[in-house]
Image 1 (tube, rainbow, N blue to C red):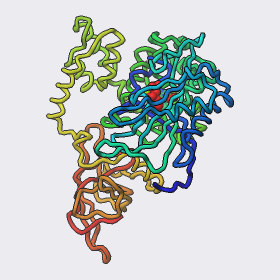
Image 2 (image 1 turned 180 degrees about the vertical axis):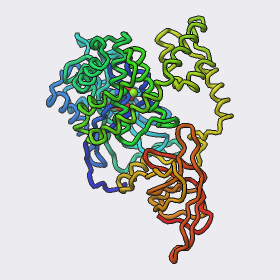
Image 3 (image 1 turned 60 degrees about the vertical axis):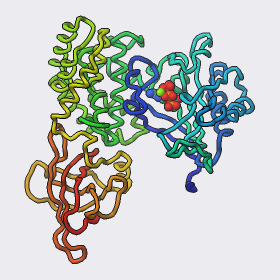
Image 4 (image 1 turned 45 degrees about the vertical axis):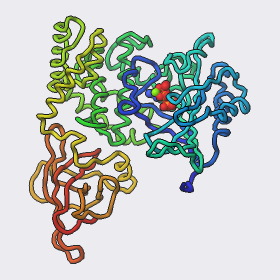
Length: 511
Ligand code: ATP
Ligand code: MG
């Protein structure tokens, strides 16, 4: 409904698909075209051009500008959905036929699972049209579209945002229509450089070269089911993801999105140690090769290089302390489990005592053709949760979503200085942000729970298994606003910001 300042845009989005709705972690390393972190290139129309131009330009870029062979390209369109009362996207189908010279037999219809894009349960959505690339030597891969075949992969998705889904599930046409496209950089580079794997392109080779150098292992051979080659891909993939996420303020940690990073890091450490036989921390030494390959486009990586390496080094060291004993326990469990299953108690101890994320135990089990008693493990975890006093992410009174952290940067709110957390006494601070669980608001009163961001704090935020501090934020009597008192009931850390959650006991607090 807004009139945008820029009705069109092009960009590269940093994408991480290692948890939540889109989770490609299980494919990473085992295939050649799913990464935890990848760059999604896009062109956007905000109520400006629509299907016609999006389709025409996509074809022109692929075939005219880049000269990709037309008989290797396949497109998909939406086949309609009875439940939603939606017809097939004949409009898009006809535009492909009329505006491009694609072989009409290369256009196929697919249902909502593949060709209808929705971000969440409600909101803007619409049909999409994907372009797939057949890299088989004899161009015989047409029947492999959408079948997870490594030789026939999706390269570009053109999304046509034309409906709004409301709370009751019904769709209504949007007053103005939008385009949002996504093309994986690593995949298109592979096509343009004539390779059969994303990892054979120059986006990756410097990282692979460093892995060879630092581990002294034989060079990468690109085999799909060779353990060393899998480890090469996993390490190279994971270090990119870690570097990019940490540069953006993400941190490896015990819960939520931070645990996503910890899991990724520990998978990498395990391979460095067990597959490549490296004793000390290794991943942090790969940071320069990531800077070499991504630093031009994302300068924040270059700027924060040494801090990123330090964070990775610290996490590696801490996991390495328990890794050997964990592997020993795993070996024992593998031997006892009749060669078929890792028992629940071992999986739990691996997690609880030795810091092995359950998915890492599962990866290790799979390598040996074993399974893990996941149900039993979940039961033990549930019990442990009940007895543990540690606040889990969902028990928290309030959380600070990543978008808000982004806002702080644009509002020039600096990270919280919490050097005083190990000391004692009173700290003089300023209120830099007040969060009501939904919005940043200018003041806090006694009507609800609020989260307060200060420039400095002496309170220790929950971290590393230690509960957060509680305390008081007091504004001394002042002539305009009087006295104010805020009881801090929980202290949490989000990125580099400390959030003091609690309620006003007296007066009001202002930003
Ligand atoms: P796939 O079916 O191959 O997993 P997708 O349907 O999940 O792809 P989209 O959500 O449409 O992909 O994302 C748009 C584009 O982003 C894809 O066409 C692809 O080029 C790229 N892409 C998606 N997931 C990944 C990934 N894990 N690693 C690298 N590129 C990806
Ligand atoms: Mg996918």
